Amino acid sequence: VTFEWRIPDVREIDHEALWSGVIVASALSAAVVLQLAGLPPIGCVFKALSGLPCLTCGFGRGLLSLSHGDVLSAARWNPLVPLGAAAAAAYVTYAAVALLAGSKRLRARVTGREALVFRWAVVAFCAVIWGFLIADAR
Amino acid sequence: MSDQFPPPLPPAHDDRRTGPVWEQPGPIGSRFLETVRGVLLDPTAFYRTMRRSAGLGPPLTFGIAGTLIGSLIGALYQLMFMSAGTGFGDVTAGEAAFASLFSSGCIVIVVPVFAVLGMFVGAAIYHVMLLLLGAARQPFETTMRVVAYAMGATSVLQIIPICGSVLAVVWSIVAYIIGLAQAHEIPTGKAAAAVLIPIAVCCVLTALFYAALLAVFLGAAFGGLQQ
Image (cartoon, rainbow over all chains, first blue to last red; front, side):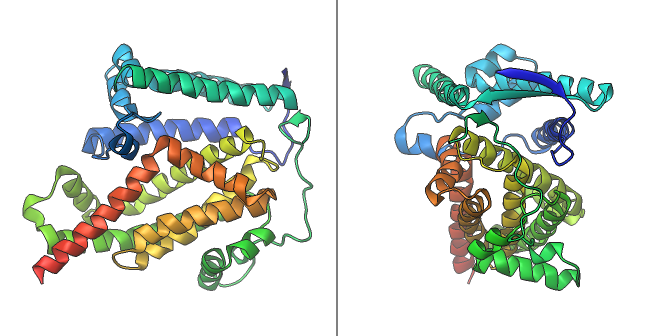
């Protein structure tokens, strides 16, 4: 993997501005919706059919726990919640620094083989999280 | 397969791709209707000629316009079913909040915000899936354009009473698959996998689909009982 700090192509989207905006707006919208209406009354079809939790089961309740500052409970509902929140917070911080610092952006370049390894790592990560949810009898 | 990831940017201009009618000059109403017709009735030709990198502004405005029209009419139907089917006396807290939102006119502000977030998040999920499948032959902008035009056009289907929202969900999935296949120039199977795997894995959209289906049947049943 090669990391480079460069000025993006003029045709490239400014991902830092775009995704930090989307993350902040999504977080604010979720906070407003949870405050006004609570969790939506949607059940998990996969769990209803199979009896097993899906990969995102407990996500809404985990978000609710996290919004109350209870990280452990959020991780118990679904580990993706605190991990995702931490990743989002780190990205927003980086994006804010990059946007304030100037026009250079951090970009990663990987070979096809590294991309393949990354793909399988993502699949394995999801399998581990799913295994935890099943083992924990969500 | 390229040994570089992400792949290099495509050429800035492609003569075969002249863009949808929405991005051409002309009366806004006819451009909108012609674009909706293109996505709904001939998605293959529409996405085969769609420009892949001409900015996010036009597809976003189209997506917002279509979603706003569809949501307003869909909300009107829902309100009619609520008053005709269950009455306002025993509505749930969510329904009451929704009715209050609609009556206060906030929906005009809320829907575009959620539509934009939905388009970006949806496009990001599909693009990550394309990357994981090794099928992202174009940058994120192309995926975003596919999703925005598909979402805007299929949302208009909500003007059909009773089954409009279900039709919109089903046809949007079809439009995403065809659009990603044509815009990224990848096999339809890979495009279908990129769209359907998140639905199967996350099941949130599946749940929404079944909830909408249930709401339609309940609405029809309550409507039948009232008569």
